[in-house]
Image (cartoon, rainbow, N blue to C red):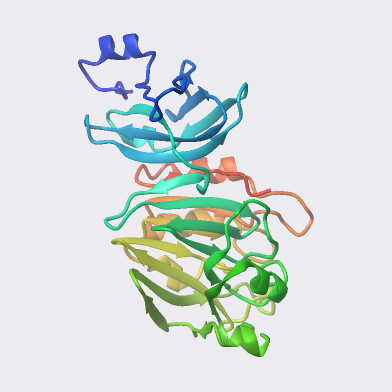
Length: 330
């Protein structure tokens, strides 16, 4: 396997301890990387010790062009560990850590766009939050998580209780926060919530400042499972932000509309049995539409077992263009 750090950098890496380290705030002790660990699949495990506060790991393939990779909250005395699953796809990779000046940051992975970074924060099951240009977007929240900001925009895929809770929508959104939902959800909302909700059917879309939201199909195809998620009732979504396209599958199987998606940069794929995709369906779908990054979520099965995410990742990585990010959803 080719040296992932590239030629001519051994001296610099030896001096820097395999990574470049920088502290943003004057008067603070610099965060310290422990020796990095390269896994058998060539991902990099980064271990960082730092004082209390928010930190951002940045990476570069060509110095000095740095891009944000993770934002996380450090507790003094705890070694923070992050896995860079993009490393296997790059010829070189340098890292540094910056302490952030402030307290109001969403932690998670960064997606660099032409209109600011999108930070991706898993919450649980099918719920996650996105931070972008000071706005907070939630998908399928069913509880209010302490410490997370209120929502400027909430996406609801369908009416099942593990994806939709009207009282949570009411308490989670900002005063003028907007909700996007399929008609079946819209029709069940209170009059007050309806005034701040846009109902989208499959194929419909709406434009918000800097953001295009498209509702796409999300349904079951296995004959025994058709009643779980009938065609035309629930939505998946495609968000276009700063030239990047994020796909949210909703509760869906490996449907033709998913397989023919184009130019998806990040995909959130629900996979559990019997309600959504099986592992083999998910692998087949990813190989068909080739997203840049995949987040498997919603992977707890009806019998309380979990989909084999490592097996999914190993199979998907036979296509070297797809990065699989396994994050904490349960």
